[in-house]
Length: 141
Image (tube, rainbow, N blue to C red; front, side, top):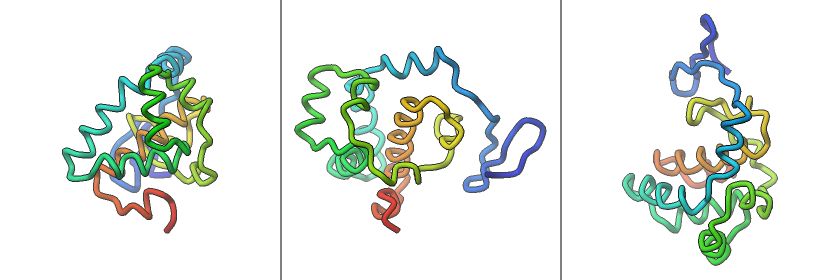
C-alpha cells in the first residue's frame, strides 16, 4: 500500500497523497446509471491526445470485457448503462491484478463490485494514456 500519515495514504507507486475513501451508495448508484456511450468519447480523446490509438483502446477494453469493436458499437447504440455493460461482460481472469489509485479511490479497497469494475476500466485507460507498455496493461508481464 503506502505510508500512512493521519488519515491519508501516500501511494508508493506515484507519491500521490490519497485519503482513504469508501464509495457511498449514491456514488455507486450514479456510476451504475451512467452510460458507457457518455464516457467512451472521453476515453478516445484521452488516449489519442497522448499519442495512443483508438485500436489500442479497443484492445484494452476487449481484454477486460471480451467485447469486440462490433459489440462495443451495439452497446453504445443501445446507450447501455455501466450496470448493463458489465452484466454482459466476461471479465478477464487477471482483472484482479489491476491495482492502484484512480479518481481518488484505491481500486483494491472498493467494495462495490460494479464500481470496482468501472474503475478497472478507468485505470486501464489511464495506463494506456500514460504510455505504459501494452503487455503490462494487459497483465502479461
